[in-house]
Amino acid sequence: MAFSSQSLLDAADIGPLQKPFKNPKFKRNPRRNKTLRQILIHETQFRQTQPLLLDIPTYNSIEASPSLFPHAKWCDVTGLHGLYTDPKTGLRFHNKEVFAVIKNMTQGMCRAAVFADAWFSGDASLEK
Image (cartoon, rainbow, N blue to C red; front, side):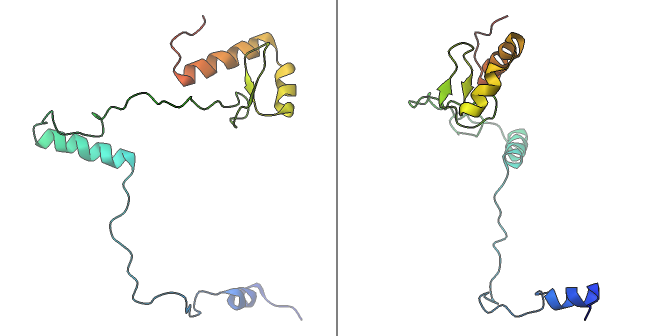
């Protein structure tokens, strides 16, 4: 016995069924979380309409001290947590499979990876 595709879809559709676990009086909160972009746009609009007082903290003016924790070390190839460092190239790697890839890299590829790592981490002492 063959079903047509439409009758099969109608039989599998669970949309019109009553869901006893849902509260029929539930209303979603109209206030949603704002994205960073929305917050920054609202802040610039606020600055344009009202004079900025120096003692009022804003998202752009809040400064934090440097972290006391060491920065996380990430694998230069995969982006996973880099537990190990290759002593020859200085590249961080996640496991032995990634280390095999690093061993097969040429000198120029390793130098480019180290340069990219320093660039994205914000290191001011980049090799030229």
